[in-house]
Length: 106
Length: 406
Ligand code: HEM
Ligand code: FES
Image 1 (cartoon, protein in one colour):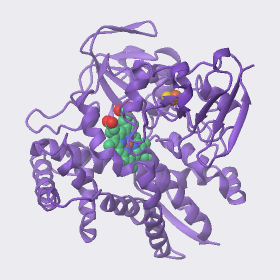
Image 2: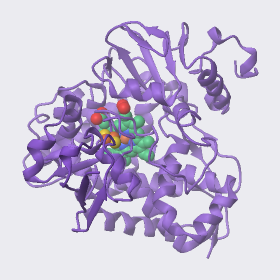
Image 3: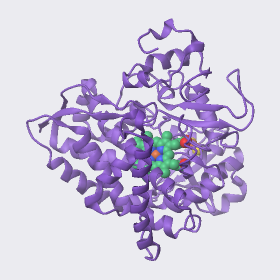
Image 4: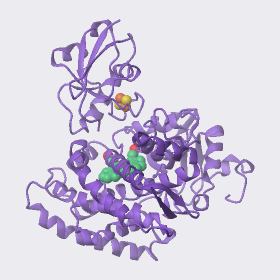
């Protein structure tokens, strides 16, 4: 099982054993990682599952898809490494992935 | 229709938009039948012309997020816009223009700014609650819900504080018409809206030059995408911000009191555990669904749950019904302040038009209930609320209450 590391805005780290195939959003919710609201339940239409991918992981994780980009674009606190965590499926390749959580979801 | 059992009327005669169903609060049973038997329903004839009704959560979400196939232009309520008095606003524009204009103003209500607003909101909430009469009945809508939302708007616009009730009036006039009784005639409505434009044009002039302010007017007057707006567009976007922040939050503030009175067990949970307040706020918003619907126009023929919506058809997404859909929400007709996943509701919409003020609304409601719980053991509802007779603004004209301090 790949390990994912979520870092809260205040620095608190959560190391989670994730299931392959689940999304990064659902994994956080299922394991009690705070800071992700996911109001639309993973439909790429609320942008409240915003995370920032640690710099050295961005190429492995990849770019936002089109509809994700549209939602992210409306977030004033969006950064170049921002993603919506409901749009990232966990794979073995992502073992060790580090993502940071924003101070607020918009 | 209003005097009948919804199960005695043929489905092809169903017109859920009828004013009387809303004025007399009969709509929920009709929605239930639509959800069960005709979730994508066509009404061929109504006061507002032909339209489709979507009543299930999943169908509404599918359409709401698909802005390419379902346009928000030219208007977002079931009523077609007035030809001779258009009010362009970004809620009724599609990307990319929508995105450009929204980005100009959304910074004012971004969470980082709300952090600095929190103290002001709390102070004003405390003042309003401290001034309420003891031991006598009074109108909660007027004294609390309207007063607090209006003060908040005045803050966001940096609007002359003593004139703030003008904002409430303009909001009512913009969303109503002769049919809801706020004005006598359409001409009166236009006159009042022009007065609104004049007032705000003065403020625009003052602020266009002044750098560094982050109120809505300064942002519009200085933003690249908005500084050359026509007067109609300026008025339209002002109305959007006034109405957006007014009716909606106002009615959630009233609805919470009613829901807790109707559910004494939930009121007891709240007294025992004030940390439930943030979750309760989401539940109140789902429960009330202050905007009952949004409307779209199909850009192409589209198949939804077995029906074909034709290009050009008017599609009404009934958020109020979707938020009571048992297919997506567990025990939807129960008001549960500790509901799991309470944030997963339709009341703010989804997709690029998702409510820009949703965090502000939640913040205002959270502070209101935190301050209420510090002061009052019980806010007692003393009579029936008077309902707004509208199929869009789902709310209250008045609510008599009496306070029981701690
Ligand atoms: C409980 C309170 C509120 C509710 C239920 C609510 C509901 C909604 C809904 C349903 C939409 C349209 C979504 C769509 O078309 O898909 C919307 C949009 C909007 N709301 Fe709210 N609203 C609330 C509070 C506020 C507040 C406090 C503001 C103040 C700034 C505000 C400003 C707006 C704006 C500007 C839009 C247009 C967004 C866009 O088109 O991009 N709302 N709101
Ligand atoms: S959960 Fe809504 S966009 Fe990811």
